[in-house]
Image (cartoon, one colour):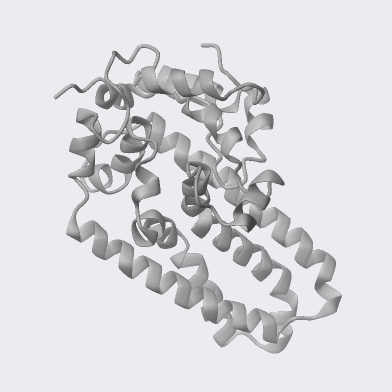
Length: 275
């Protein structure tokens, strides 16, 4: 299937494609779409509690680890620190693409536990792309905070138990893990900003324009139905090279040949809902 990867001139044409949704019937996208209404109602108090716990633990561990990184800072590590930070950002961007692609392309909302808790928001997002802009900080970032808890807790344990010599030796690795954790944690917030066209702080717009975080125009490419490309949503740096390699389409073809499952079938089902 042909993929749209050109960022030039993707304003009104892409928006019209997203509103009408090639092959998706005549239902209008947005909060009044039947599928969007049903998916939004599946957000539960238990899910909200999990998100709160994840956010509190994540930022507590992040603050603890950041303080120890400052205490153990050494100028001799400078180039390794910079390399670790860049590598952490790239890993976060690829990871965001892998998770995004997996949840967009496979699985079902009806799956036990993970369906309503983790796949549901991806289905809602394609039917009502602006729903994320109405989510508060906890709902936006809770799941990503949960993903970083294990590496952040392991880093904190190392800071409490390792010797000064071991801290010195492991410092560049800790910088890599910290950069990875920060950008994974912020991925959904960055994604939210890429759908926000009014009221963004100037520094956010500056980072988007410099392509340090995911730009709004760049992310529109993913929202052309059937949402089969440009999955990386942290910085978006890896979207073009992965698309040129045909990485996602080759992976989908492999999985479909082995399992017989059709990519994005559940996504299409929710988009077609009329009642």
